[in-house]
Length: 96
Image (cartoon, rainbow, N blue to C red; front, side, top):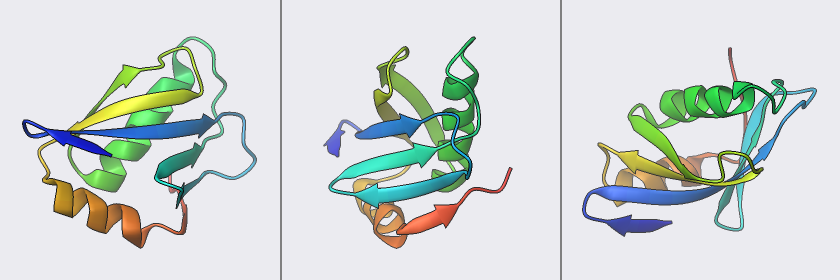
């Protein structure tokens, strides 16, 4: 996680076409398991929805739009709030 000028950047790894939707935080990377396919931007939209609901703030994908490895920018929260949320995630099921 990188914090600079009110923007927090976080590396994520997306697992599309998963049987179960869930979020796992390990080794300083957020793993997001989603049901959607990685086609026509469906997976990216699902990832943004999950992250917006998890962090309750604005999120944008800044790297990896066509890759499972992505970097997102989080605005509207400070680094401590983000760390607290990440540390509270062990395995969390995602409600649609």
